[in-house]
Image 1 (cartoon, one colour):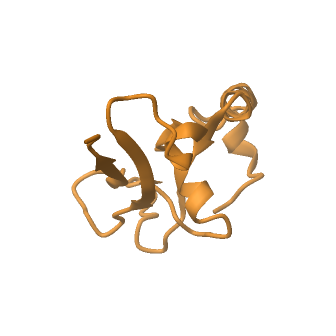
Image 2 (cartoon, rainbow, N blue to C red):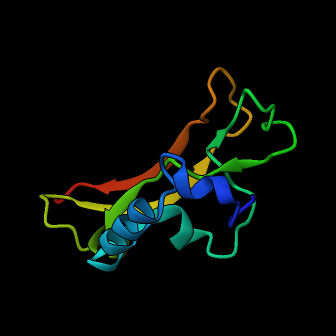
Image 3 (cartoon, one colour):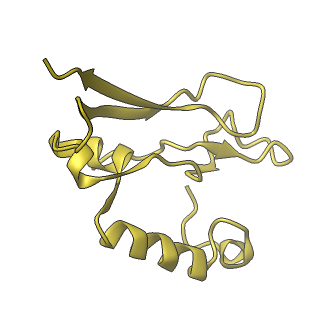
Length: 112
């Protein structure tokens, strides 16, 4: 929510080295599933600072991801059956941690 804040450059999960490494992984055939299905989504976070009380005003970070190969999105998996990624989303109303659960929906079709 506050991209560009000075403290983020030194915070675990948001350093420039971590972000560059993550971008390299995405550029080498892997896909951020949530972003693929929800490219214009804003304000969807998986972590909120409890110390700062950031959950209620939704001032968070997206630190948790499902990453998959493009073939799983296209339905060209090489297993006996066919596995296709259908969606990914967060469950921000599930409390009990400073992170919320994230969901990866898969369709599994068995070969005949």
